[in-house]
Image (cartoon, rainbow, N blue to C red; front, side):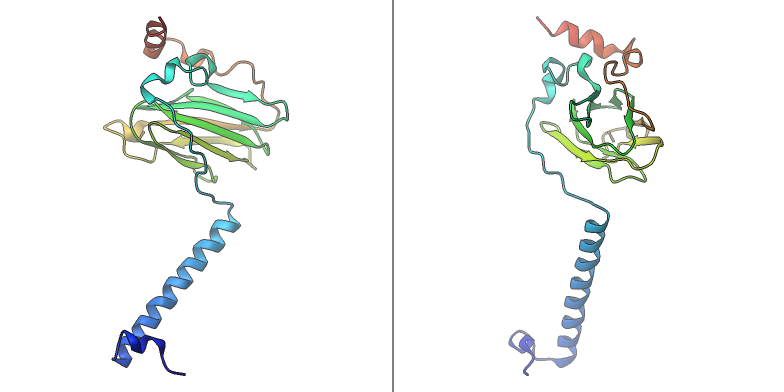
Amino acid sequence: MQDPLRIICEDPLERKWIWLSLLLAVVAGLVLGVYAVASNVHPPSNVETIDSARLHLTEEFGEDNLGVKTNPDGSVTVTMVGARYGFYPPRVEVPVDTPVTFRIASADVLHGVHVPYTNMTTMIVPGYISQVTTKFPQTGEYSMLCNEYCGLGHDAMWSRLVVTAGPVGGEAPAGESSAGESSEAVSSGGES
Ligand code: CUA
């Protein structure tokens, strides 16, 4: 059979290298594909817009509604705001082996969130609500790190994710942790 690459290339040595690089591309694609399927990695699939400058005036991302809520079917929804330089609430507690849906919005610039040793990671693009559903198979304390450079405090932008063995009471979304924050004054001032 004649080499199909002859149409674009006369030199046999060069054609060998073209074949080799094509093969490498296919192998790399297969490795990534198998890894993505095996580790349940998936691209963000939620396109939902929101006005980042008015987050505190929305119902869902109002300060009082942030945190962990247990849904009627037993799954958990975590509503968070990423803002320079932190995630709010700064500590969330979710049950182990339970579907957890994160809904996160940025109040200012581009952030990312990454929980090491889990498959929880997403960008938080201003103007959009990032939504990720995952399960945490192991209990423990995890860091939620910002992984998109967002300013001078970027490396200090992180919060705590606690995966607990028991069910989590959804009523009190980390109420005490937000006391004394300046954003409280901002949100109550903008209501009228
Ligand atoms: Cu937020 Cu880097």
